[in-house]
Image (cartoon, rainbow, N blue to C red; front, side):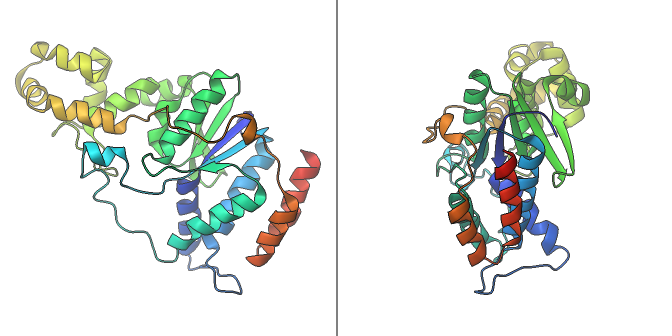
Length: 295
């Protein structure tokens, strides 16, 4: 586990992964009162194991709450191809937030912004303040946040198998800087978010263009140097490329209610025990007590 002291968790990404990890094998858990808990169980398991391995001084969770963010105002079809989440998963978002409240873990969501924007804002603030930040997510969009002081850990199999992206590892594996991850999306688009990109340009071509021109803006400015169909594509779709880049760009000025000091890790054992008991998740109490004693 990367040695960072400020752990920021992409709550939505982790809960969805936790849910499907158990749902695929048919293990849809419920409490004795009928509350769905398999996603909550997996989330707690991953988060507490990460805390155990990292020993962070600060912990924060960010959430997506709506697809109707400011990006939909720019492009109404943004994320328009995504299906609905399973009925058994929907209520677990509120349940998980209630559990985190009981544990005393600071968390934030905003109707106009995505979890990535919240994460980006706090990660930059924390790194600028001298913290070593680890962003824990399954979303490669977050790779644009990589910088000195910010490592992005992409979950592959929970937290047992992850790729840790530093600026050097990002360049080694992708051949791009963190900023160019945004330019890459501007050119090739992103089917998962329904970002259009330039028709006919895939990852290989986009990387080749960025290697030569650096940014989408510089490519457009120097489109007269291109030849044949590539020149036609960029001339015809330059506005789409710029819009796609804007859609893909994580904003880092989201209004936050938590200060960095408010994110200091301090589990509230009394309320945590009560909430975990209510959900028949008592097995996590000893794990929490162990972390509190060591921490």
